[in-house]
Length: 172
Image 1: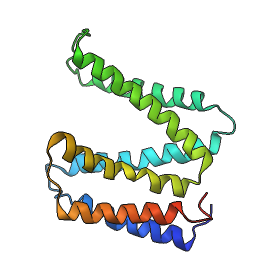
Image 2: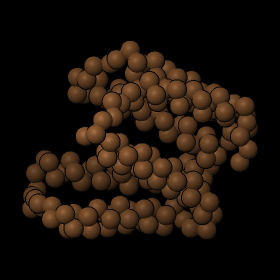
Image 3: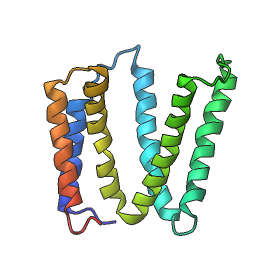
Image 4: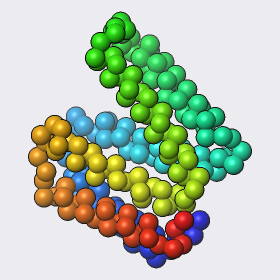
């Protein structure tokens, strides 16, 4: 894929927006977890780009089966390794909510693989940043989290990046 002027501008705006939104005070207690978050930030788009590369060979369902198996086996193995306490399965609101959360992740995976098969990796990656805007909005609406000026400014930069990249004729 070619990186156009609009692509570079979108990247710059999105990066500036994320700096505003994620002003994190990293210290000795949070450094390890910040590194894990950064690692996750590399793996997710890596999978999205890789799925685009092989989506002509494998079906959306096959790709999501691989993704879901990995997402189940790896945490399960770590849980056993660290001797994590397991809670018995019960038929209650918490377990039903957990089931629907898992279902939402499967549907999300299907939609991401499908979307990346239709648009460029650059465009899809910028559009996925809308997750940040949705997260800020849901935190405010459902959990009474406060909106900071820096978060609003950062969100505006991210929306600008999405708009510029999405309406670029060369981006699809």
